[in-house]
Image 1 (tube, rainbow, N blue to C red):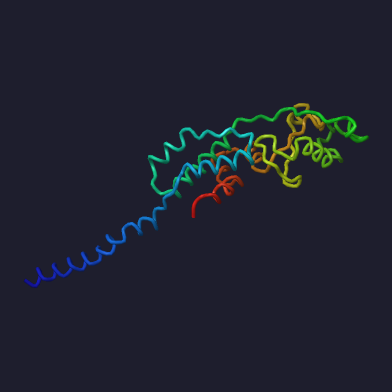
Image 2 (image 1 turned 30 degrees about the vertical axis):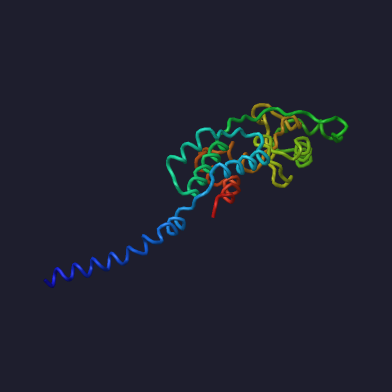
Length: 208
């Protein structure tokens, strides 16, 4: 009888402990599983990307179906969407190519002379001036993704490398943002994608 009574007592304790969980189950669910409208999140993200990265073609068609089936928590859904969009950003096809020229009246006296490839492969003394001219030509935007950036935050790359006969003429100078520069130079896109500025910027829009 003592053993049976002990089981009864333990059983009552367990039942009493479960009653509050049952009563407040909705509040507990909301605490651990935040709900929301994923379509509103997608509209917000799309608006942001259209303004800040207009040259990247993002595909939303299969993302929503995937997260709707796999996850219930809105925060996890939004995080998965962000990770997929960053993956698309990193894998966007892009090749460095010749750019448009600028008006000759905007060039300086030593431009032609310093545009030629130097024997020691050093950059010309007016390289910073060339970078700024290319940055202004591209209206302060990255050639790959289209984000607007400050001159100090931009990177200038050669479309045709010096070893292949490329020079320092403005048509051969391509302006990229930090993220795009890292992407096109990356030997491991999956690893690089986890450390891009675009990931941080999009994650700030995920529900708290």
